[in-house]
Image (cartoon, rainbow, N blue to C red; front, side, top):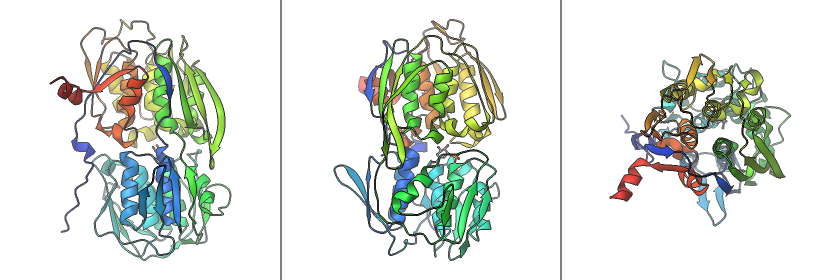
Length: 464
Ligand code: S3P
């Protein structure tokens, strides 16, 4: 048996605990949050498929996108970095190289699902694997429609990865009614559709993020409107700049809404309507959010987001078609809801259970451990807010820290860390190494704005 190549990142084996506590003063300042993770994955993959050298300004440097970039390198793209951009010499003219080893996608569902769409259309076989969290996530949602296109792709009996792909199949375009609103499923099928005969169309039950559809024309693909592509379309090298990630920006926005008298400005934030649910939710909660300097980065709308703390944040009800545009921000919203006035109800968000962790369980149990009243439901959660000041009625009131398990989920770890900025009692947040998958500079950025959070191990080494 071939030995699996060691994953150089080994994020899962790095136990990181954060110490986070009440911000000593209002948060203040300005920041350019890290670049968009979803758009970065797509930029590297499309640049790999294109003919010629693409120039990507502001590619996200974080472990998830590194996994995609490494895989694209193995498949034959030549990536290099100049002072201001990542340059990707695509395989357009020559075709992809067969990898000698399984491709390891680490923690990234987007990397695995999107690249599977590319790989089913190649003349060689591939195995795609990932870390323990990724190997628990559902993959039949892409495998089943890819089979309808003529692909040969095997999952394990539980429907998860490793994925085994047999190459050399001729694909045909399909019209697919997806049972889930998932941009990863949609993008996987569109990428496969580029190499299929005829047209591939994906119809979703709700509008998932449309970054792939917006980016294909930037690479010269003349795609029909909506989520569809024509087989045989050729990609040509492109120049593009990546906006700041609204999902990473959301943590700092939340911090400004939670810590009294705070005032922050976040620059170049992506304002794609399929990602803007958190901004709308903040408005419904009564927070003070303003957008300025609206512009565009290629096909993507951007702007600066200013958030000022305002007293009286209210609980809200969210569900139905509003969920896809806020799906990645729901952990942060749940943590905010704990300090809002009134109850927050989240419904139709069963997808949260199959993210990097079961985010309903991880956030719900963490909030319960802090003394908040929470009811978890199969598709969401009810959270009874306990607004400040003081929050003495929390079971957690006092000096001693409370330990919370983020279960290796980057967004849950960051959400608890932000909540701690507004709690009296310090939090120890275990299972936080994966913050590096999307936001490696998170602690530095939060500290720069005036927040209090550090890596327990690094702080101990420092004290020695
Ligand atoms: C993503 C799509 C969403 C999102 C994930 C990134 C993408 O997942 O939660 O963080 O880049 O396409 P689903 O497609 O599973 O909804």
